[in-house]
Image (cartoon, rainbow, N blue to C red; front, top):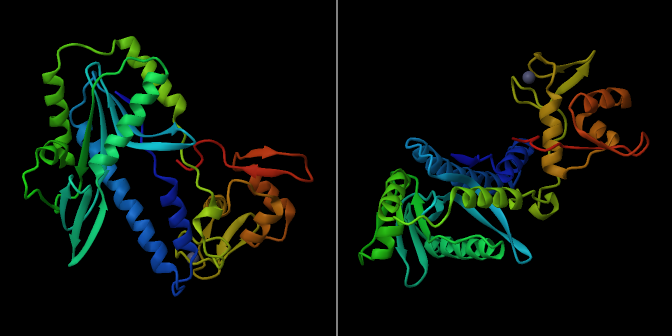
Length: 322
Ligand SMILES: [Zn+2]
């Protein structure tokens, strides 16, 4: 069963909003497009694992698609976690193109793509660190601890994986995303003594869901460019030249209309400038002069409202972006 479903990372939504609102010839546009593509590749890699696991539904497995759990003063993140009566599996997903070679002795993952060589930290070690944090967390909450296995998946089938030293650790732990269900069923077949009862698994599930804290990026920390295009984007021609006329948006570029083109703009505002919005801020952003019109728009969007009439602010409710 799936205890927690994956949602689109906020970073993707933020970088989409930035690239949407950066003029085409802006000097920083390539930088943000490449950040967006990196996040999209990572997300695609994680979704591959979800897909292959979904082909072999197994009621003995409790799956968490992405967890962000507290550790000391910060957090640690697990791309995919599987909890069963016999073992726990931590899966780290990598979506890298070209040729890759993992050297566990030097703790590096080397990637050669289009003649450019890059080094990354050893993903098996990363997954082991997550697993040790998880073990401490479960022990702290007096839960029994089954063995924890770690795997690293490579999702791009075109990626060439090399293991010239035939390192056993690499052979066992590094695999294609499609291999994951078989790795898990092999693990299951090997175990005989249950370490977690059904009740324990329920407790672990409740705890992890309670402690999971989705990441909400602070727009100030993202070094967003200042010169983003404001206004409402036309859903037909993508130009930011919509004007509000008699309760409808009319595009000054293509002449088409939309009733709710402002919704995407309000979302963009929250993604770009943070989760608090006032009437006057939205008036500036949407290019609307009328306070009443913006009040109507804000009240139509089921936002969280704080404060009295004069200093009222609006915030996105839970699950607003998913
Ligand atoms: Zn248009």
